[in-house]
Length: 483
Image: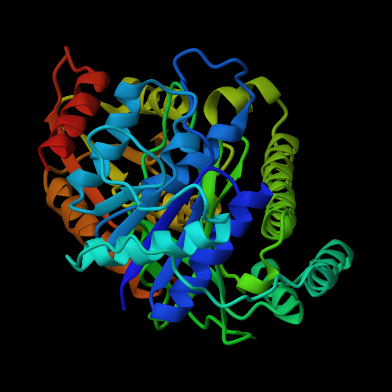
């Protein structure tokens, strides 16, 4: 089945809704899958009028357009590129050519192919004709200039508003405490007549600002799935390639008709996608946009609450650690609040205490270094909370590997170091063997749906009067980079 994308700026205007209504009717009639993407207007971000104007976050939807997702595109370039120069407009369009995608514009622009419509057509007829044209273009058939005859499917405003009211009121009234918020959203949507929908999220918000535009993560999580009007339980973590999501959501069959895909975001962070199949009879002005805003508000509220809870837990943990210590300043200067290990400053201080007290002839300074190689992907896919759990697990495992004479520190966010003055040079090989088994032990009892990957290095130095601990740390760092 052919997959067609329709790129528009917004769905709030009546004539745009009429156009999309006609496009969905055509998708149903000729049995193609149509995904409507309201991606907002491209902005001139070099001189933003207001740094807190996050309207351009919608434009991230256009980053999901790939050759894997679609065979053809329809683009309302007149509205999408309203605020940018012709050079930037052409750069935007040429990016799709780079993907090998065939596309047509809904209005005239020199050098680009456009749909064949005339001014006497209604918006609904234009939408219907646009889908017929792009399918002909993709299949290398001649584009017919005739005005299409489309069945008069009335938009049922009363039923649409009833369904919207049903969904909205339940979303507002429902207490999601202790429940799977994504599952509940889809169950409520099903009560309101929706048949197909998906909520896909990254583990954490991906920063997207003027100075730091976002880099699309490779993977995205399926957090909720509605199929044939039934919420599908997700018994295990379902991960998809991000740039493949319009084509494949948990192997659900591609269906004819119209889908709408919106980006989910919180202020300056991208968090995921909401994908929903819309009945053309319900596509009245504001129906889908209000539905989306309600879903987005619930998810944002959940995200905000989760962030506050996470922050509260961190503060409480810090308070507990401080209460155990007579000196707040000493605690802050030496200890890492998350793991209870020495921080970088504390690690150096305790290591130098060993050097000054025990490092002499016939002894050896032994340092190991462990870097969590998979921490970035764990944070992106499963969230920073899961990343913190991984950091704590490695901290605990380091203590199991080494005895109390060894100084252990969290010297960077994802890096640990150990230091000890050894009487025997053989301790180098013993430490190396311990670290060789560390990754295996971390994953042996790990019930999570991911593997913890680490890099490690060990260095040893025989006593000399010019010994420098920083040089030893730098040596280990270089070894890791070589890996």
